[in-house]
Amino acid sequence: MTADGGAAEMAVLVGLQAAGKSTFYRRRLAHRYTLVSKDLFPRRARGKQARQMRQVEEALRAGRAVAVDNTNPTPEEWGPLIEAAHAHGATVTAYWFPPDLAGSLRRNARREGAARVPDVGVRATFRKLRRPGTGDGFDAVVEVRFDGRGGFDVRPAPPGA
Image (cartoon, rainbow, N blue to C red; front, side):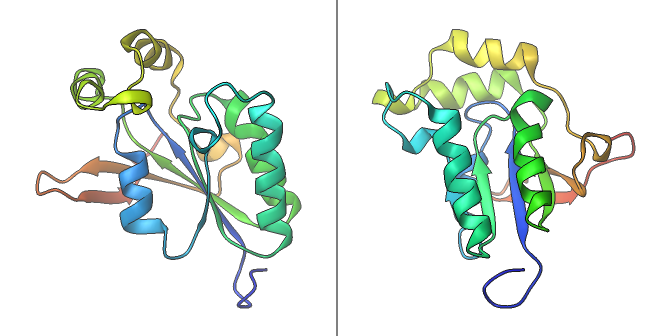
């Protein structure tokens, strides 16, 4: 249960680097969800996974909705998040950003400094990225795509998710 008496929630963003996940968070989720992201930790920080899980647990214990904004490409990444959320009575929605490797590489190339991911990293994520589904433990899966007008089209994921 959230601090305002509603049902606790977790949003897990799943997609390539430069797929629009952080922009989507800022535009659509920031007003309601506490952000947890490994990108906010120092680049060379150790124990990022453990630190992330501590932040997730803290937010859930406090009754806050939490959004996890990382690539979260596999069940090994999202499984512990789902488990923690369900242990706190939270529902978990996967926000799936279907891969567009060429588009992600173009957007990533426009990034500067530490925000730019080496292309090899984007390609490595692409190779292991798996579409999340309710069979993975998510309570819901929605698909997020650019709408062509500077925003996002969000809809329930097609069957098979």
